[in-house]
Image 1 (cartoon, rainbow, N blue to C red):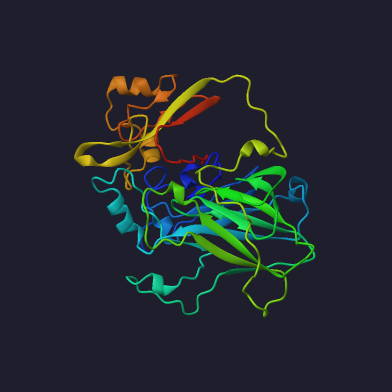
Image 2: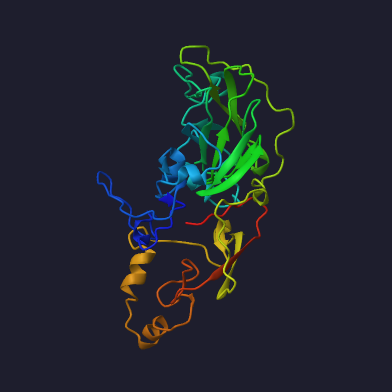
Length: 381
């Protein structure tokens, strides 16, 4: 599944199991073919079967524009990808089974650790109940040139945790958010939620120490309980000189305390390089209430309005929409040919598949209200 790509005209290539396609069978392959006209920037992809993404089935996708130098308002000599993620020691299949069991009341599994580009180090003495070895483990290392700026494309590919990311003794400038180029904005700590992408431009310091910690800290105030195995900070190393030197920085952390609220970077500080005016006329407004509810057998599930999605991996929603209803009932067929937009009840049970269908090109306002006490970032697909 691709994050942030419009898939205009190719929604069957979106990679969403149960919605746009069947899963790829074990031992087989599938080639995705689509166009990315009008899009450039930092994106990523992941498995969409279960929550395999939290097991590490993820990757970056960078789209370069021929006008990149004009779109990016700060010059840079190279770009690097930084994947930050929470990291669970147990497989997603067992975590999901535990999370969906009765009496959990939406207590998401708290990650014990985190990684940058798949790397971290742990003191195994703090994990007595784990099969742990620290042999040949290292922090992620980024060798950067000291004579030009570097663009870091930062992606939170994790399952749950929000991070605050910083580089010791560096301020940096945000220049892209989720594929949108923005006018540079200076900050020194970046809040980034799962699935979000930011580009920052890093300038070598004038008094260059050579080695600096890149720190990513999980915002633990979002967690429902304490995990005794938790190590909330993961570090990478920014190195401005040639490989072969020491890799242990002695840089200083920023002095102020870490964020105690679960919230995004204040996007009102940011202005897109190419602003697109919102349409003056709106054809329709869709209201969505996001909540978690406890139903039969004390099972907690996520809801949009009064619908909790139960898809079918072998009968995707898109396929059934194209094929039409199995019944040839005249009333159902007439409702499908209606010019009115709305929730499709002719093919789908809205209790488990709330499919909002438009019949013409329309301008829609989608208003999402979060009725849960947790932080729930939404993003376009």
